[in-house]
Image (tube, rainbow, N blue to C red; front, side):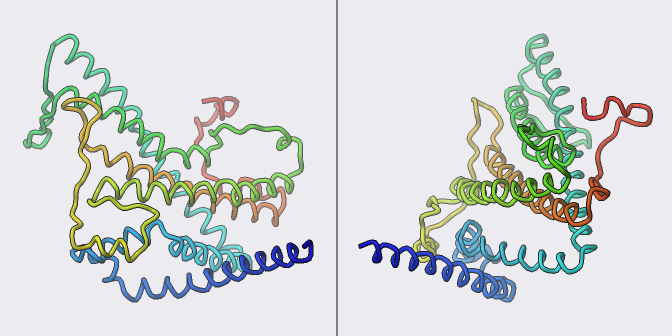
Length: 309
Protein backbone atom coordinates (compact mmCIF):
# COMPACT_ATOMS: atom_id res chain seq x y z
CA UNK A 1 0.00 0.00 0.00
CA UNK A 2 2.82 2.38 0.90
CA UNK A 3 4.59 1.59 -2.38
CA UNK A 4 1.42 2.35 -4.33
CA UNK A 5 0.98 5.66 -2.49
CA UNK A 6 4.63 6.59 -3.13
CA UNK A 7 4.26 5.71 -6.81
CA UNK A 8 1.11 7.80 -7.09
CA UNK A 9 2.85 10.71 -5.36
CA UNK A 10 5.80 10.56 -7.75
CA UNK A 11 3.40 10.31 -10.67
CA UNK A 12 1.55 13.43 -9.49
CA UNK A 13 4.82 15.35 -9.16
CA UNK A 14 5.96 14.38 -12.66
CA UNK A 15 2.49 15.17 -14.00
CA UNK A 16 2.60 18.63 -12.45
CA UNK A 17 6.10 19.28 -13.84
CA UNK A 18 5.04 18.08 -17.29
CA UNK A 19 1.97 20.33 -17.18
CA UNK A 20 4.17 23.29 -16.20
CA UNK A 21 6.64 22.65 -19.02
CA UNK A 22 3.81 22.16 -21.52
CA UNK A 23 2.06 25.39 -20.52
CA UNK A 24 5.32 27.35 -20.70
CA UNK A 25 5.96 25.98 -24.20
CA UNK A 26 2.37 26.73 -25.26
CA UNK A 27 2.79 30.24 -23.90
CA UNK A 28 5.33 31.05 -26.61
CA UNK A 29 3.01 29.62 -29.26
CA UNK A 30 0.01 31.56 -27.92
CA UNK A 31 2.04 34.79 -27.85
CA UNK A 32 3.13 34.34 -31.46
CA UNK A 33 -0.40 33.41 -32.54
CA UNK A 34 -1.98 36.41 -30.77
CA UNK A 35 0.53 38.84 -32.35
CA UNK A 36 0.08 37.33 -35.81
CA UNK A 37 -3.76 37.24 -35.61
CA UNK A 38 -4.73 40.53 -33.90
CA UNK A 39 -8.11 40.64 -35.63
CA UNK A 40 -9.30 37.61 -33.67
CA UNK A 41 -9.15 39.45 -30.35
CA UNK A 42 -8.88 43.20 -31.10
CA UNK A 43 -11.69 43.62 -33.63
CA UNK A 44 -14.44 44.39 -31.12
CA UNK A 45 -16.94 45.05 -33.89
CA UNK A 46 -17.00 41.26 -34.09
CA UNK A 47 -18.68 39.97 -30.93
CA UNK A 48 -16.69 36.73 -30.98
CA UNK A 49 -13.48 38.74 -31.08
CA UNK A 50 -14.66 40.75 -28.06
CA UNK A 51 -15.43 37.62 -26.07
CA UNK A 52 -12.06 36.08 -26.98
CA UNK A 53 -10.44 39.21 -25.56
CA UNK A 54 -12.52 38.88 -22.39
CA UNK A 55 -11.74 35.18 -22.01
CA UNK A 56 -8.01 35.34 -22.61
CA UNK A 57 -7.50 38.49 -20.52
CA UNK A 58 -8.06 36.51 -17.33
CA UNK A 59 -7.06 33.06 -18.52
CA UNK A 60 -4.32 30.56 -17.72
CA UNK A 61 -3.04 31.02 -21.27
CA UNK A 62 -2.47 34.74 -20.69
CA UNK A 63 -0.72 34.00 -17.38
CA UNK A 64 1.80 31.70 -19.06
CA UNK A 65 2.36 34.16 -21.91
CA UNK A 66 3.29 36.73 -19.26
CA UNK A 67 5.50 34.19 -17.47
CA UNK A 68 7.28 33.43 -20.76
CA UNK A 69 7.98 37.12 -21.32
CA UNK A 70 9.37 37.36 -17.77
CA UNK A 71 11.59 34.31 -18.38
CA UNK A 72 13.04 35.78 -21.58
CA UNK A 73 13.60 39.21 -20.04
CA UNK A 74 15.20 37.66 -16.95
CA UNK A 75 17.58 35.48 -18.96
CA UNK A 76 18.68 38.47 -21.05
CA UNK A 77 19.18 40.50 -17.88
CA UNK A 78 21.22 37.79 -16.17
CA UNK A 79 23.70 37.84 -19.03
CA UNK A 80 23.60 41.61 -19.62
CA UNK A 81 23.03 43.56 -16.39
CA UNK A 82 22.80 47.04 -18.01
CA UNK A 83 19.61 45.83 -19.73
CA UNK A 84 18.17 44.84 -16.36
CA UNK A 85 19.14 48.17 -14.78
CA UNK A 86 17.49 49.99 -17.69
CA UNK A 87 14.32 47.94 -17.17
CA UNK A 88 14.29 48.68 -13.43
CA UNK A 89 14.80 52.40 -14.01
CA UNK A 90 12.11 52.45 -16.70
CA UNK A 91 9.47 50.73 -14.55
CA UNK A 92 10.28 52.88 -11.52
CA UNK A 93 10.12 56.01 -13.66
CA UNK A 94 6.67 55.05 -14.94
CA UNK A 95 5.35 54.21 -11.46
CA UNK A 96 6.89 57.35 -9.95
CA UNK A 97 5.44 59.51 -12.73
CA UNK A 98 1.95 58.04 -12.44
CA UNK A 99 2.03 58.29 -8.65
CA UNK A 100 3.22 61.90 -8.60
CA UNK A 101 0.47 62.93 -10.99
CA UNK A 102 -2.25 60.91 -9.25
CA UNK A 103 -1.25 62.35 -5.88
CA UNK A 104 -2.67 65.71 -7.01
CA UNK A 105 -6.11 64.10 -6.84
CA UNK A 106 -5.74 64.42 -3.06
CA UNK A 107 -5.52 68.20 -3.33
CA UNK A 108 -8.42 68.29 -5.80
CA UNK A 109 -10.43 66.18 -3.36
CA UNK A 110 -9.83 68.60 -0.49
CA UNK A 111 -10.68 71.70 -2.55
CA UNK A 112 -13.76 70.04 -4.02
CA UNK A 113 -15.00 69.03 -0.58
CA UNK A 114 -14.68 72.63 0.64
CA UNK A 115 -16.61 73.93 -2.39
CA UNK A 116 -19.36 71.32 -1.97
CA UNK A 117 -19.80 72.14 1.73
CA UNK A 118 -20.03 75.88 1.09
CA UNK A 119 -22.39 75.63 -1.88
CA UNK A 120 -24.64 72.97 -0.41
CA UNK A 121 -24.76 73.88 3.29
CA UNK A 122 -24.42 77.66 3.19
CA UNK A 123 -25.71 78.82 -0.20
CA UNK A 124 -28.18 75.93 -0.71
CA UNK A 125 -27.09 75.44 -4.32
CA UNK A 126 -28.45 72.28 -5.94
CA UNK A 127 -26.31 72.18 -9.08
CA UNK A 128 -22.81 73.22 -10.09
CA UNK A 129 -21.90 74.25 -13.63
CA UNK A 130 -18.31 74.21 -14.86
CA UNK A 131 -17.65 75.89 -18.22
CA UNK A 132 -13.98 76.93 -18.52
CA UNK A 133 -14.01 76.82 -22.34
CA UNK A 134 -17.54 78.02 -22.95
CA UNK A 135 -19.11 74.55 -22.93
CA UNK A 136 -21.07 74.00 -19.74
CA UNK A 137 -20.90 70.84 -17.63
CA UNK A 138 -23.72 70.73 -15.10
CA UNK A 139 -24.20 68.13 -12.38
CA UNK A 140 -25.90 68.04 -9.00
CA UNK A 141 -23.95 68.83 -5.86
CA UNK A 142 -24.54 65.21 -4.84
CA UNK A 143 -22.70 64.08 -7.99
CA UNK A 144 -19.67 66.19 -7.11
CA UNK A 145 -19.83 64.91 -3.54
CA UNK A 146 -19.83 61.31 -4.79
CA UNK A 147 -16.84 61.89 -7.07
CA UNK A 148 -14.77 62.40 -3.92
CA UNK A 149 -14.84 58.62 -3.51
CA UNK A 150 -13.46 58.18 -7.01
CA UNK A 151 -10.71 60.72 -6.44
CA UNK A 152 -9.78 58.95 -3.22
CA UNK A 153 -9.67 55.66 -5.17
CA UNK A 154 -7.32 57.28 -7.71
CA UNK A 155 -4.87 58.17 -4.93
CA UNK A 156 -5.06 54.68 -3.41
CA UNK A 157 -4.84 52.71 -6.66
CA UNK A 158 -2.30 54.74 -8.61
CA UNK A 159 0.01 55.82 -5.78
CA UNK A 160 0.62 52.39 -4.21
CA UNK A 161 3.64 51.50 -6.34
CA UNK A 162 4.94 55.06 -6.06
CA UNK A 163 4.74 54.84 -2.26
CA UNK A 164 6.56 51.50 -2.40
CA UNK A 165 9.43 53.00 -4.38
CA UNK A 166 9.65 55.93 -1.97
CA UNK A 167 9.73 53.58 1.02
CA UNK A 168 6.49 55.05 2.39
CA UNK A 169 4.72 51.70 2.70
CA UNK A 170 4.22 49.96 6.04
CA UNK A 171 6.83 47.27 6.73
CA UNK A 172 6.49 44.83 9.64
CA UNK A 173 10.15 44.40 10.52
CA UNK A 174 11.12 41.45 12.72
CA UNK A 175 14.57 40.46 11.45
CA UNK A 176 15.13 42.53 8.31
CA UNK A 177 16.91 45.52 9.89
CA UNK A 178 19.55 43.43 11.62
CA UNK A 179 20.70 41.22 8.74
CA UNK A 180 23.41 41.84 6.15
CA UNK A 181 22.98 43.62 2.82
CA UNK A 182 22.84 40.40 0.80
CA UNK A 183 20.43 38.77 3.27
CA UNK A 184 18.10 41.75 2.87
CA UNK A 185 18.24 41.45 -0.89
CA UNK A 186 17.52 37.71 -0.69
CA UNK A 187 14.48 38.43 1.52
CA UNK A 188 13.32 41.08 -0.97
CA UNK A 189 13.66 38.69 -3.91
CA UNK A 190 11.73 35.98 -2.06
CA UNK A 191 8.99 38.39 -1.06
CA UNK A 192 8.51 39.79 -4.56
CA UNK A 193 8.36 36.32 -6.17
CA UNK A 194 6.29 34.44 -3.59
CA UNK A 195 4.12 37.18 -2.08
CA UNK A 196 3.72 40.22 -4.35
CA UNK A 197 3.44 38.50 -7.73
CA UNK A 198 1.14 35.56 -6.83
CA UNK A 199 -1.31 37.78 -4.95
CA UNK A 200 -1.25 40.35 -7.77
CA UNK A 201 -1.85 37.67 -10.43
CA UNK A 202 -4.76 36.21 -8.45
CA UNK A 203 -6.26 39.66 -7.91
CA UNK A 204 -5.93 40.42 -11.64
CA UNK A 205 -7.89 37.30 -12.64
CA UNK A 206 -10.75 38.17 -10.29
CA UNK A 207 -10.72 41.90 -11.07
CA UNK A 208 -10.68 41.25 -14.82
CA UNK A 209 -14.00 39.40 -14.83
CA UNK A 210 -15.38 41.71 -12.14
CA UNK A 211 -14.88 44.57 -14.61
CA UNK A 212 -16.39 42.83 -17.64
CA UNK A 213 -19.41 41.60 -15.69
CA UNK A 214 -20.36 45.28 -15.45
CA UNK A 215 -19.58 46.23 -19.04
CA UNK A 216 -21.37 43.60 -21.12
CA UNK A 217 -24.38 41.34 -20.89
CA UNK A 218 -24.94 38.41 -20.53
CA UNK A 219 -22.52 38.31 -17.63
CA UNK A 220 -19.27 36.41 -18.01
CA UNK A 221 -17.49 34.37 -15.39
CA UNK A 222 -14.00 32.98 -14.78
CA UNK A 223 -15.55 29.50 -14.84
CA UNK A 224 -16.82 29.95 -18.42
CA UNK A 225 -14.95 27.94 -21.03
CA UNK A 226 -14.05 29.64 -24.32
CA UNK A 227 -16.71 27.68 -26.23
CA UNK A 228 -19.37 28.74 -23.74
CA UNK A 229 -18.35 32.38 -24.12
CA UNK A 230 -18.36 32.23 -27.90
CA UNK A 231 -21.90 30.83 -27.82
CA UNK A 232 -22.93 34.03 -26.04
CA UNK A 233 -21.57 36.12 -28.93
CA UNK A 234 -24.94 36.08 -30.71
CA UNK A 235 -26.66 37.89 -27.85
CA UNK A 236 -23.83 39.84 -26.21
CA UNK A 237 -24.20 43.62 -26.01
CA UNK A 238 -22.63 46.53 -24.16
CA UNK A 239 -24.26 47.31 -20.82
CA UNK A 240 -21.95 49.76 -19.05
CA UNK A 241 -22.81 50.09 -15.38
CA UNK A 242 -23.84 53.61 -14.41
CA UNK A 243 -25.25 52.95 -10.94
CA UNK A 244 -24.34 55.53 -8.31
CA UNK A 245 -23.85 55.41 -4.56
CA UNK A 246 -26.82 57.72 -4.05
CA UNK A 247 -29.60 59.44 -5.98
CA UNK A 248 -28.11 61.78 -8.61
CA UNK A 249 -24.65 60.63 -7.51
CA UNK A 250 -21.52 59.77 -9.47
CA UNK A 251 -22.60 57.46 -12.30
CA UNK A 252 -19.24 56.18 -13.49
CA UNK A 253 -19.14 53.26 -11.08
CA UNK A 254 -17.38 50.99 -13.61
CA UNK A 255 -14.34 53.31 -13.41
CA UNK A 256 -13.64 51.96 -9.93
CA UNK A 257 -13.18 48.52 -11.49
CA UNK A 258 -10.87 49.98 -14.14
CA UNK A 259 -8.81 51.44 -11.30
CA UNK A 260 -8.59 47.97 -9.73
CA UNK A 261 -6.91 46.64 -12.88
CA UNK A 262 -4.64 49.69 -13.07
CA UNK A 263 -3.66 49.13 -9.44
CA UNK A 264 -2.83 45.46 -10.02
CA UNK A 265 -0.88 46.25 -13.22
CA UNK A 266 1.32 48.78 -11.43
CA UNK A 267 1.90 46.36 -8.54
CA UNK A 268 2.93 43.57 -10.93
CA UNK A 269 5.37 45.88 -12.70
CA UNK A 270 6.78 47.10 -9.38
CA UNK A 271 7.12 43.55 -8.07
CA UNK A 272 9.22 42.68 -11.13
CA UNK A 273 11.31 45.86 -10.79
CA UNK A 274 11.79 45.14 -7.08
CA UNK A 275 12.94 41.58 -7.80
CA UNK A 276 15.39 42.72 -10.48
CA UNK A 277 16.70 45.58 -8.33
CA UNK A 278 17.18 43.22 -5.39
CA UNK A 279 19.00 40.73 -7.60
CA UNK A 280 21.29 43.41 -9.04
CA UNK A 281 22.05 44.87 -5.62
CA UNK A 282 22.74 41.34 -4.34
CA UNK A 283 25.21 40.65 -7.16
CA UNK A 284 26.91 44.05 -7.16
CA UNK A 285 27.21 44.39 -3.40
CA UNK A 286 26.39 47.02 -0.80
CA UNK A 287 27.78 49.91 -2.86
CA UNK A 288 24.92 49.45 -5.33
CA UNK A 289 22.18 49.91 -2.70
CA UNK A 290 19.49 52.31 -3.96
CA UNK A 291 21.41 52.76 -7.21
CA UNK A 292 19.49 55.00 -9.67
CA UNK A 293 16.62 55.17 -7.15
CA UNK A 294 14.56 58.31 -7.76
CA UNK A 295 13.30 59.26 -4.31
CA UNK A 296 11.51 62.48 -3.44
CA UNK A 297 13.36 65.04 -1.36
CA UNK A 298 12.29 68.02 0.71
CA UNK A 299 15.23 70.01 -0.58
CA UNK A 300 18.71 70.94 0.53
CA UNK A 301 19.06 71.38 4.28
CA UNK A 302 15.99 69.25 5.07
CA UNK A 303 17.76 65.89 5.11
CA UNK A 304 16.95 65.30 8.80
CA UNK A 305 13.24 65.29 7.97
CA UNK A 306 13.43 62.91 5.00
CA UNK A 307 11.12 59.93 5.42
CA UNK A 308 9.03 61.62 8.12
CA UNK A 309 6.45 63.21 5.82
